[in-house]
Length: 343
Image (cartoon, rainbow, N blue to C red; front, top):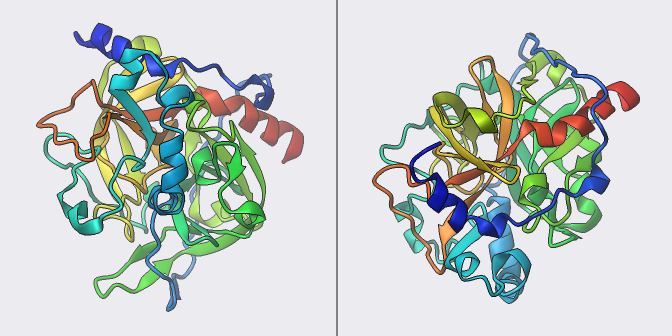
């Protein structure tokens, strides 16, 4: 543990959450999901593909008033002075809707920005893609099976309500989504989905359950490949420096062609979530943290921010305001059930 672990735990009492047990199924046996190779499909060009906002930006503009009303309720307020002093928001939730300062923000980026553009033609980059929703917003997702995509629950639900009603089932996953130098949009393949599993409909409260798995109508993983899953609880092994990577469609310059932080760290763990320092921003929600074997160890979902602050300019990683990831062991029981009983 880092020397600031005690202070971090004191400041993180807002993670007074319990796992939503009703949505979990016991893991009967460990199931390895080995990545596969495959021939890439011809790239598809979408002439009319709009530059959509992330789910965080969409919700911010749509429900800013209701979100403010919730600041004094439950996890994000209360009478605890520590909880009131540190605010935990879903990616981008604390950003101003005034877009004039968007290029000045360094949220979730620590010291020198390590990100470069991902390569949609190589593995495992080609297994990542964009979830495109009818309400005109997006999230990051990645293939974890021939038909299954892993992402964040807050891409679908907020405070117990579907963000876009039944339209969340009329959305598309576009794998290896990217743009060229002229701004033209391409992707390797696209599929709708019909089934959805999730950890909670209250991701703002149950941070350790902010995960979702969707079943695609078309098995895109047969051609694109898919990443594996490492459900090991790494909490007692932390910190683990420079052993992980994160790919995501962050709003700060990587919303059309995903950015990859190739060497980032898990710093600490607390009440069922990991704290990490992978460079990212709003839009990277649902992106997987991969180990050196290209196995998912967690899902990027949120970040800690000081109360009433829009910008976080840290000269280096600050364990007081880390990024948050949901560990793979949180969703592995459900995924194991899907593979053994449903697939």
